[in-house]
Image 1: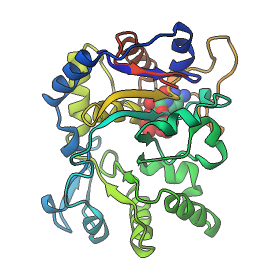
Image 2: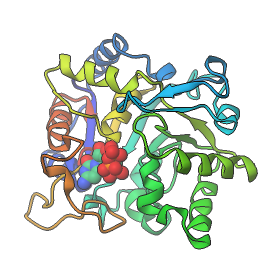
Image 3: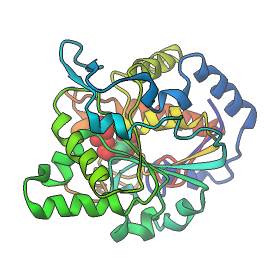
Length: 308
Ligand code: CTP
């Protein structure tokens, strides 16, 4: 599709910023939105609503159908009563991926100028604001991130750091895919308790149980066989509903940049490139190529990795 700008201010961006004059393709953007709506309704699928469930309800995990959990009292209380992005439509949105391609990009100001900024997996911003910006309107939190980036909350220090990260988000939407895969319920509950006990302004959202398969279905019809869409691709697909232009930054699932220099997997930690191996849950290079095609058609605008 066209109408996406991938700014690889190192990443998809770097490649494309060199090609210069990218033009937004409104016709294609509208077509894509319409097409996606045949598979999912991003506004509704963005979050389960309080009215649709009750505390104690059993929920089967999307990727582990034989395992289940239940809706806790805390989760029930924190679910939104109306779609979190109801009536929102923005001229442009930034989706910030976590690739190290963003380091030294100085994309921060540009990212923050977008009226709506989406980030992934509670990636830190403060110490990197020059390169990644600082505003956040929606941020995702895979339960595994609590383990990976916050020491599984095992010590008071990690708990404090986690609490500080959530507080810094103000009234943003915190998007927690709580029911995708088994294993993170304790961490999700801890985060929700914290939000509740400290009266944080965060607006919690938990994606619908059909979202993942609907997104896969949409991309399959585009002949993009994605095993399990990455957070970045999920955000792209959802954002088509509430953003006109989409600008992607920090999408660069490759260990080297266009000039052969080493690129960190994440701009903020030491994680390595497991996503190029066949055991990976994702097919990020395929996603990248797909988004690059969109970029060349004027759908996805990016400067630095797709869009920075
Ligand atoms: N990303 C990328 N290139 C990288 C790192 C990340 O394109 N080197 C994009 C991907 O779309 C990814 C998103 O940025 O989903 C957020 O990155 P990350 O937090 O690393 O997501 P993962 O945990 O790797 O994957 P997921 O949350 O999708 O399971």
